[in-house]
Amino acid sequence: MANLLAAYSLLRRSSRKLFDSRPDLNFSASIRSVNSGLTYNFTQKCDLSRQDVCYRDQIVSKHNCFLRSSGSGVLTFFPRGEGSGFPIHYRNLASMASTPARNKSFSMVNSDDISYFKKILGEKGVVQEEEKLDDANTDWMRKYKGSSKLMLQPRSTHEVSQILHYCNTRCLAVVPQGGNTGLVGGSVPVFDEVIVSLSFMNNVLSFDKVNGILVCEAGCILENLISFLDNEGFIMPLDLGAKGSCQIGGNVSTNAGGLRLIRYGSLHGSVLGLEAVLANGTVLDMLGTLRKDNTGYDLKHLFIGSEGSLGIVTKVSILTPPKLSSVNLAFLACKDYISCQKLLSAAKTKLGEILSAFEFLDINAMDLVLKHLDGLRDPLPSSKHKFYTLIETTGSTESHDKEKLEAFLLQSIESGLLTDGVLAQDINQASAFWRIREGVPEALMKAGAVYKYDLSLPPEKMYDLVEEMRGRLGAEANVVAYGHLGDGNLHLNISTRQYDDSVLTKIEPFVYEWTSKHRGSISAEHGLGLMKANKIHYSKTAETVQLMAAIKKLLDPNGILNPYKVLPTSVLPQSGEEEPKTEA
Image 1 (tube, rainbow, N blue to C red):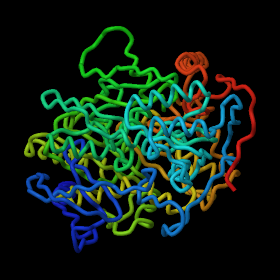
Image 2: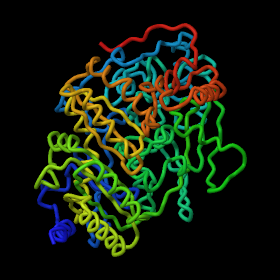
Image 3: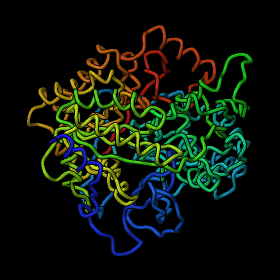
Image 4: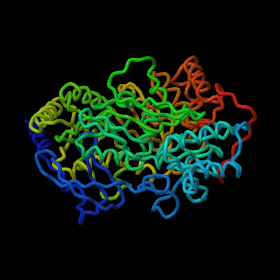
């Protein structure tokens, strides 16, 4: 009887009163449609346009807005610099586990180079202003900062080709840059590399409504593509917290994962074709739109996830699923991590084709969000829980989806997998639930310095690493865990008051060794960039890395494309080196 009462409470409870009311339409949590039909995005304050969507069995107002960004496309709710309301903690390159040295074979930009670039791009396409360059030189976490004196902004593939041909001839190193929302230093210069921004290449080229195939330029912001497709009745197979700033070219180049990979798979499956420019300026037209093409090697996969080290992606064709209107979201509590695992297994079996997201966060992550983010309250305030999960379902028939989800939740309560939970009764509640999960990175930034690790591990082993890390660090740090449990992706975050090398030595190389020992990956979805280039051997064999280096040397013999990233310097020998400069 007690279980039945608990189940009834879960299925009928509304959490409307748990969240702050919003007096007008300029509220901080805006809601818009996305991959599964609906999703929820958050910005400081924005102008809203209204549309109607169906959430559960209600007709509600949908609010669309784009995240406002700084000059380099950094999310506004991660403020940069002073006056942001919380301190920014800087981490010098000198404090990192290993630092590269500048390759002296690379030339330095001179006045003749500037003149050439202005000739092909025009004055507006050549950026030398210090303020704009400061943004482009710095990653959004302010962990990495280069010293480039030049940013180029091409508007076409031909211009990208001209830039790379010239840079290759002059041996000028180049860093491709999209929205600059990466977490491993892959999108900013290490030294004085020329920045090639794709931001002006932001056109949708075509959309096949019959087959759902989108062709667009690399500089299109992900959220803009989401909105475009929403109006066409389709969705992007990719959803990220940085959707308001990240660009599709960067997403493809890093093989970005996101919240709904469990439903739609990785970009290796969704990207049908792409166009890329090699280091010597050669344009590779692989912009196919066919579902099937078994003619020779499928070379596009070399560029998906190569982080701009083999070529610059300039166009993409991507398969987009139709938008489904029935969306349900549950915010649930579990007593232990084993229950989370069992709940995932049960969800895959019982919810099957309608399961679109399965996220988790631990009590440390939950406490951090509630402490540092304004306007949020605990959806389950009656007691504290060690683990929380978000389960989203997406389908086309409301009655069918609702029946399946409610039956699943009833069974989970009766079997003891769930200790508490709440179903979102409208889109505002769903928005608030997602805000908790997507707000963890923001809360970590506000809490102080943070060491971030993006790991793939067997789901049954994921939390063992968290507990071992807490044992190693003790009271020195707050170890926070959350991530995409549905696809075995752990976001391990170590939060401290300030960056400290003594803390770092306790984290690394232990975190990489532990991951390697358990056959995991040291980069699930963020890439290797500068941070992990020399750590690749923890996930890949020496023979595999050597083959990667051979491919790099074949496609980019002078090594000008995104140097010092992805591959270790030991397999890419450099002539003449000098020590890098670090921030003051």
